Image (tube, rainbow, N blue to C red; front, side, top):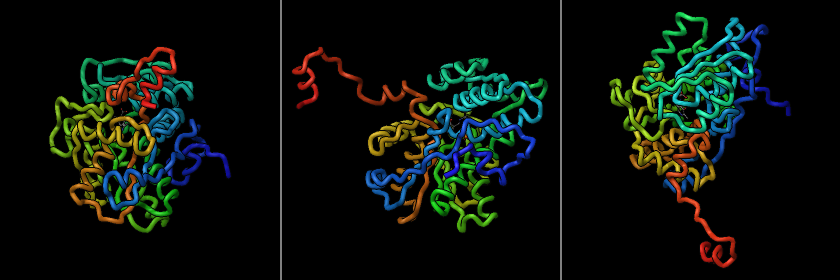
Length: 352
Ligand code: F0G
């Protein structure tokens, strides 16, 4: 087998790159598509469920697929610095790929709403990190203005190359399954990823690599559900900080993806998200962050409502690794028990 060299080399024919594009890669992509029979059993779903584990990318989230493209193209155009607003994962990925490219990264994150692991990533990769006393949407407005007037490249998903890179996840799923799923379930924040997947599926379809297109189903957190509620949410709230967004940049294209594919957008509560988060870790041994668990919470809701045709194949995108957010993990599980260094005391605790 040929060594994996990242999504640009793997899917070059489908991407806007040339021989002159300096490819900046951390060998992102090629993430596992894991069959989840215990989840199907636990949720009473008569479905074939697969988990596309995007948390296994180099910086622990799907953002790396978009960032290899955005940073390579920024470098090609002569840019020496990139900027983004982020709920955490974009900033971690931008910081890592900028380091790899030898250029600067400026990131703005909402104060108090970014998981510890993500902040530590941006910091250790040498990005200039600003925490803003405001929310993600406000930070995005600011960095967009700065990028218009100053020599820095914006690497949020309004940068067209980001979605070009992210669409490769859909290609991989089709390559791994040998076909497209019947339903594709995915969390929605700034709404770039659902847009990218739909683009990827359509392009692969057009190229004759698959016969049927999937239905795209997106899930927002109940306190941060602008698309579902069809209104801007001024003060979004949810435990899933990655998708705590009230005015998504790719709102229109995401709606189109859902409509064109005959899918839908739904909401899940924080309680449902946390239950799914624990279930994923305990039933399948897969530790993903709360925003990713929104997808499983969504699946459970859809199954209960009878919205998924029995016998269907369903793919869930799990967007970011659980280690990103250790605080939520510890709050959601039982704490370690302290014992003296004596066998009897240990056995008593273990009930053996
Ligand atoms: N899941 C995770 C783990 C994310 O980090 C994000 C977005 C999403 C889902 C939603 O994807 O925005 O394309 O709809 N995180 C961005 C960030 C906003 O700044 O890291 P989306």
